[in-house]
Image 1: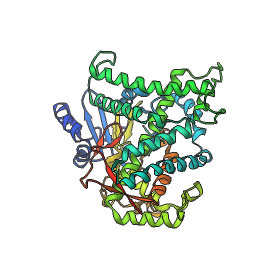
Image 2: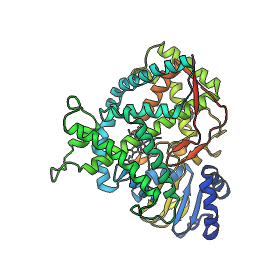
Image 3: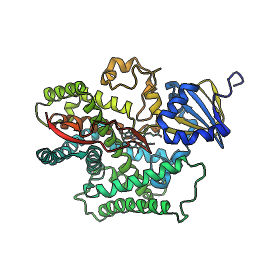
Image 4: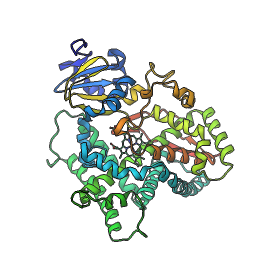
Length: 451
Ligand code: HEM
């Protein structure tokens, strides 16, 4: 590797530590500016070395081509404090086994069967929206979408009604995310056992999460759920170790179920909330979407078979995921030394793959800050570099729920759009807030207008 330019440009020492608070305050703009200043590989040299990557080829190299040389990065260790050793953070042979166990719940044929449940849950929500419409009531669209996607993940994967727990789960997530992102930014982390008010609040939020999950597991054990549902929870509970014949421990079941419950609803709710926000600001795109839903569905509920015809709805969702990727950055740690983007990467380096910056970079997107769903027409997708767009990651650790999420978002969008337009009560710009996921910084308050 002697021919390599060894060190990419970037920040180190005092200059780095002086810049970090600014990056913390204005993360998305800050990292975009760093990429504009230094290029597609930026190096931070502090107590450890971090490489910030935004070029599709480098993203592909780390996530896919040489994925075996990378483990999940440092920030995922903080996530473990809430998810435990669930699928999102586990590693090696253990991860491979757990992924194999969960995978059948996400096979295409099975997901097709979820369409009816998704449409049914949306119809229930729309019945409530009819009352809101009559009363002229305003509401926060992210909360509504979260309640809906939580209900869907509960019914499809756990055969459980989680609707009654919506408030408890959103409180838990708000406390959990706030605590986790603060800790991710801290160079020195105090042990969780220390009796600080923030630690206590976090632990109590997690206990609330545990209560919900363990209640679900216990109900299944006691046979309280009707019949023996053939769902993800059953697959996890029924799994036996080939060598010992033992099932998963309660703790491991909790970690897997908690991971799926959280990862499986908030990201899709964000996608839908940002979609409504973007549509309200782009009436010509909204009109095109309404024309498609009217002509394909003719007033009836969408089914799985309608999805290929709801092409524009799918393009709208994909474009939202480009502009507001819920997973706005991914992290990895190199195991052995490697070569990335023409530079030498030592072993144990941190790699920060900046989804948001790649998705908004003028090198890969024309008018990157404009909402243009047509970018996802098949011929445009085929002409683009594969990893210019990676809202679900890539390679072996690619999101297990990507088809589930895309189908759900497309179906919910089409079903609502054939009945209502959402209007913003306040026209101000809502900024994205890069916590663990990319949340709206302020509420997106909307009213309903009949189509
Ligand atoms: C729009 C919605 C979603 C987005 C944007 C999204 C994004 C992602 C991304 C980027 C990753 C990879 C993280 C990494 O490489 O470090 C991931 C992994 C994962 N996602 Fe999703 N996700 C979504 C929906 C879902 C759904 C619906 C589920 C489950 C029902 C789910 C469950 C998971 C799990 C379990 C993993 C870890 C997979 C593994 O490492 O084997 N996600 N997701």
